[in-house]
Image 1 (cartoon, rainbow, N blue to C red):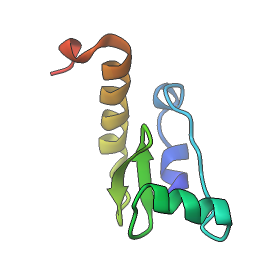
Image 2 (image 1 turned 90 degrees about the vertical axis):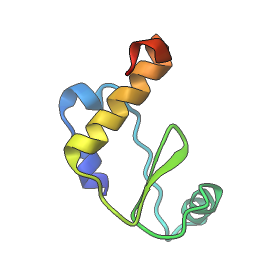
Image 3 (image 1 turned 135 degrees about the horizontal axis):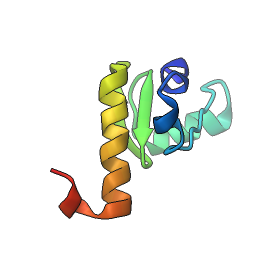
Image 4 (image 1 turned 45 degrees about the vertical axis):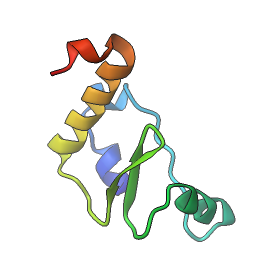
Length: 80
């Protein structure tokens, strides 16, 4: 999953901060529980569980990031 995020276009990479937790560590297990995730891979956007047990298509992930960025920075009235 981390490779999918790292492979996003540069314009999307500039909009995000990526955090990756190792499930072999106490911190990773704690974060997994905080998200109430049930399986891997798991992707959270804005600290909210968004994708679980699947790796989204690049286009889908990029679009979701764009929409969230627009909502946070321009308000909901600019996003269909």
